[in-house]
Length: 271
Image 1 (cartoon, rainbow, N blue to C red):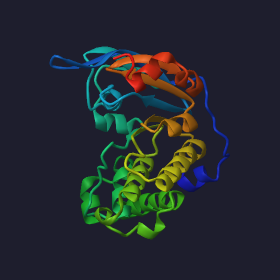
Image 2 (image 1 turned 45 degrees about the vertical axis):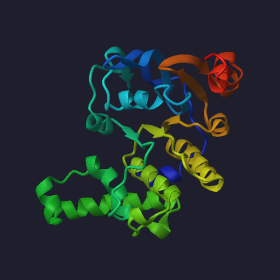
Image 3 (image 1 turned 90 degrees about the horizontal axis):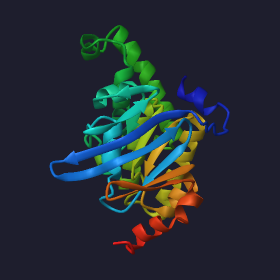
């Protein structure tokens, strides 16, 4: 489906009970340090699933396990019904898992459009020889993928910076470019690691709107790490809470925010 077709599709959210990804008893250790300890939860197709917890809770480590940067010593991860023993990031990307990072990871010397185009790499069919020459099938392939990226640029309202090197952009716009690159991969599961970190209120409002629009318009399932509890409660369908690598709560936003273990963890009462 083209970006335009997706944007013009029905605008109702389609959260289902179908499990897209299941984490079962996952444990991740670094030497004598246990970053994740026997954590289980699932992500349902079409939902916005928040992963929250204090600093050092294991949230980013969990995303790194999901998309293959880390390999847990125990437990298993099942994605689209297939249980994985070891997953490499490029394989995860080819299977529809895209990722943004806590610290912006862009090519500063490249333009916004060129950065977004890197998200289309796995979709390109021409071999490396033709891509180097930019002739024949490679040129036609590039034009097709560039058109898709232009539609993403329009969707995220960054037309004015399409030819600007991203290193010159303010932080909030760099975050939006990183989201655009992830969307260019046409993911089924989008992992967002603190997409609003370091933003002012207006930038946060814009990013919240785009996350909702991505979920609603493209039908993309989203797993979100975020420290702003107002954002989490407004955006999420379900929330899983980690503390020191363990799961302490899992449920709807209303259920989680009234859970005494969660209150204690954020206020520091239990420790």
